[in-house]
Amino acid sequence: MLTDQARGFLNSHRVARFATAEHGGQPHVVPICYAVYDNSVYFTIDEKPKQLRDKPLKRIRNLQINPHVALVVDRYEEDWTQLGWVMVQGEAALLDDGEEHTKAQRLLKARYPQLHGMQIGDLPVIAVRITRVVSWGNLSTAS
Amino acid sequence: MLTDQARGFLNSHRVARFATAEHGGQPHVVPICYAVYDNSVYFTIDEKPKQLRDKPLKRIRNLQINPHVALVVDRYEEDWTQLGWVMVQGEAALLDDGEEHTKAQRLLKARYPQLHGMQIGDLPVIAVRITRVVSWGNLSTAS
Image (cartoon, rainbow over all chains, first blue to last red; front, side, top):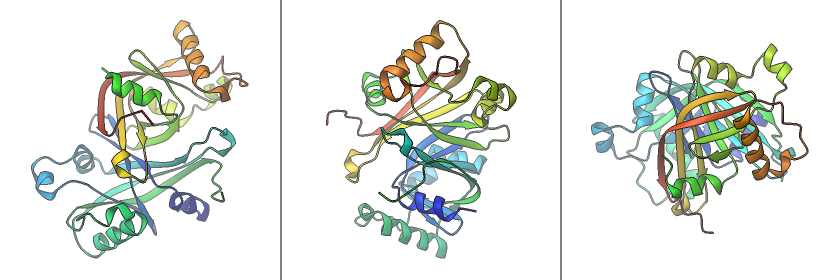
C-alpha cells in the first residue's frame, strides 16, 4: 500500500496530523507522534485509563462512532519546491493490550526518546490500518 | 472567538492542516498556507478555474457536500515542553470573487512572498468561519 518512498517520508518526519469525523460530519484534527510498521500507523493516547473510562478523549469517542480516519505528514519549507505530503486514510482500531500493543509501544519508544521516562505501558494505542495513500510534491528524504 | 494568544500562535506559524469529511464520514486532511482575519481563516485553492469546473479537487467536492471543517496549527519541538496546538472548527464558504475574495488574496500575498509571482487573482478562496477553538500546550510565541 505504502510505496518505499512514502514509507521513507513518513519515517523521516516526527509529527503527523490525525483527523477524525464526528457523527454529523464535523472533522477534528490534532498532531500526533507516530510509528509505522507494515500496513499500520501507531500512536499512543496520552490519557490515564481511569480518565479514559470516565470521559474518553474526543478523538476516542469519535473513533468509537466512526473508525474512518486520515492523517497527513508533510514538509514545509520557505522554498516551495521542497513542499511535499503523504496522506494516509484508513480504519482505526483501539489496542488496549496484547502483543501488537506491546510492539507498537516499543516502536514508539524507539522513535521518541522523550517517551523513555514515561509510564506508557498501560496506555491504549490506536492502530490505523491503511486503506489508501495519496501523496503530492517533493518526497525526497535526502537532505 | 480566538483569544489574542491563539491568534498570535496562528499568525506566527506558516502551515496549517485542513480536514474535511466526505459523506459517509471518511476524513481527508492536507497542509495549507493560510491567513487569519477577524473570525475567518483564508486559503486559496491552487487549481485553475477551468479544471475546477471539470473535476473539482477532492477538498472542494467534500466542502460542497459537507461544509463542516477543522484545521490545526501546531508547534513540534524535540523539547516536548514546547509542544502546543490550536485547532479551529468551522464552516467553509467558497469565495469566487468580490471584495472579501480580493482582501483574502491580499492577506495571503502579504504573508507568503512565494505567491507574489503567481497569478492567483482568479483562483477561488476558501473562508473558514470559525465556530469553535480548542487549544493545548505551550502557545507562547516569544522565541
